[in-house]
Amino acid sequence: MSDIESTTCAHCGAALEPAWRFCEDCGRDRSTRIEATPSAVFSAAAPSMDLDRVAAVTDRGRRRERNEDAVAIGVLGDVAAAVVCDGVASAPGSAAAATAASEAGLRELLAAVARGDEPAAATTAATAAAARAAAALGDPGDSNPPCCTYVSALVTGDGVTVGWVGDSPAYWAGADGTHRLTIDDSAAGRLLAQGVALDDPRMAEPGAQALERWLGADAGPVTPKVRRFSPPGAGLVVLCSDGLSRYLDAEVVAPADHLGAPLAVARTLLGRALAAGGHDNVTVAAITAGGPA
Image 1: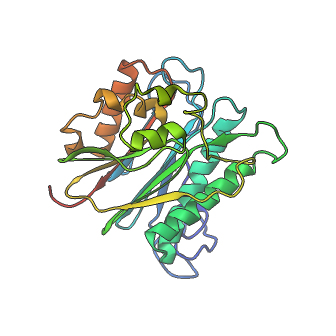
Image 2: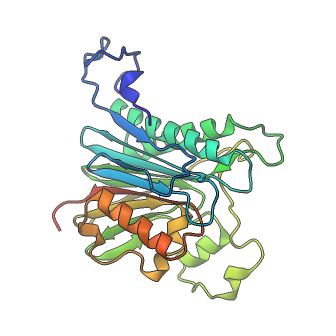
């Protein structure tokens, strides 16, 4: 767990002493709170983080020896944010890449908001920071450097902004049902976005599921895909790793889930993923969004 309050001011970036309540440079209250999970969790009990409006849980799953997911959540005034990264298991060191990317992404996301950046610009800046953090753990010449996927959500008073690289998705869960807000960076992801059924032969073609974009030393220039969303009423924005999303078509999200508190819903979704098999690491972040239903 890390706390941005103990090191730098979220508003101006000045160095802070742990005992200071206000920044000596700009005079503002140290109101930013950030929490992040460790990336390697071996306990059977899922660690959780709760900042009221945003919460998260992560678990290594039933069939994995280690957890290569990472999640970071934060609150700044009336803004709530979350970042989920999924380390690519076939690349050694990817758990560290996921942790570095999630923490760097969240820090820059909230710092950009504090600077007054628009949500889309803040999302792009945060992804760039996450990309640098992941790339720093490898070498472009490596044949298989540490790498990870990335998805973020920024919830402000006027809407939701999500940004992503890879196949960790974001969803809206409201009275109108559950809707995917992202499109996986793969051939299969584009087919699903076009309404193709899961049993379509094209989904099983060689390379259909392969990632086309990721964060890491070998990823090249990375620009996130960004989507703005105006919630039609009260609900939750849900970010997750594919340890959960692979089960969503099996109605793991129930119609009433959007009415729950973020932590309760995140724990419920985790439980359903584990009950459905839990073959992979499972990470879920949920953020309250929208007005009255």
